[in-house]
Length: 193
Image 1 (cartoon, rainbow, N blue to C red):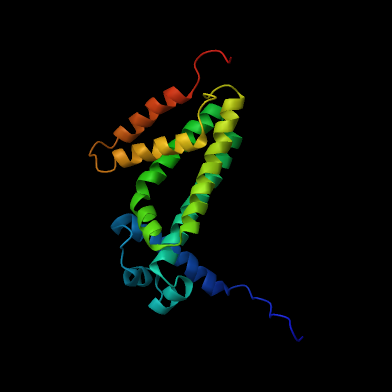
Image 2: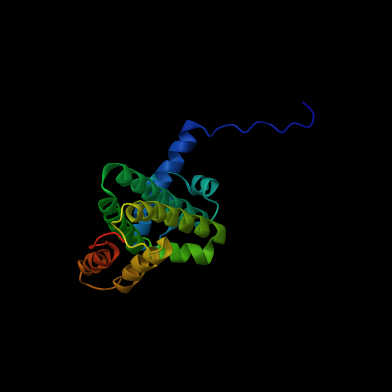
């Protein structure tokens, strides 16, 4: 067997469980304390040692990246599910509401990750979100229920803008009201030209 690299073994069951448990606890900790949540506390709450945490996630940036990627994958999956279950305009509106919540909840996480982590992972997350928005918007545009001059990037920027503008506001409903106004502008009300 000279010249052949050894086959990579899949992670043991307990290692997979530890990794998943760390991700669950990290999501909760980052939601509670922001991106600077204590890694020692995350390991403790997950019921593992610090060595196990660092074996799976060698740096804070690696853990931030994994949590953000998991959340973005959930958003992508939700877009596909909504697209299959709802009309084009309903699917787009429902997903934009989910994306708004994502943008508000993950604001500090994404910012910290971009300053600490590799830029390519941030780009991958952005591309995944943009692709999900593009699929939903394209369906709505093809059926004539969304403006034809709107791009997925425009839509993403508008929702992120709402999330940023309402981040510190005490009015919990303002973000949803603003998104509802945007959706009124996105949806066509007249005949298709």
